Length: 237
Image 1 (tube, rainbow, N blue to C red):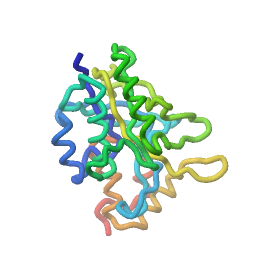
Image 2: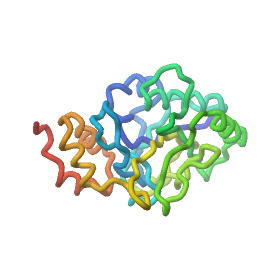
Image 3: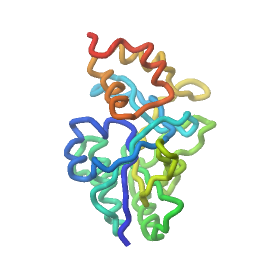
């Protein structure tokens, strides 16, 4: 049985030039859906992005808009699925030939369409692969959100619906990259919009392009209007 798979994208995997090779090789970029997803800006990045904030899944966040892009290869076996996951993680981590699907700061997770008959061996082999991965699944959530990724590497979210008409995405499997948010305080909480925009305003202008490129590509969050009001105007030094 050949299954149709896609990638649920919530950030720079969709538009970053450093990921163009992966998109060309693994995605059918013209076949996509705009979907609802619980997302927000919440992970403080490193030097590459000027210590500014990037997108994360957040189970209690109001729905934003993300994009599901179809994979250009079907999945006929667990090995096929794992190959897609490894290639996805290479694009996310900007590392090559590591055979990894995670680091301490994030991982690839799987979402199965509950309305489709997915062969048991696919999910079972995926769980076994996850079990062998060092540091897998360390993606924090707040206390009220609970677990985002279970021990079998499955994303604990509803199957996404298309924004336009509310219908379920017509795929069998979805892969995602889920990164660990930067939670602070007691109890742990996400950074405020003020903290997020202050980081962009203090950094080089090019780093705020992460926000603008997301919105240009239809990736939006409940925070966007407030971010826009606080962020220095686009292309202003």
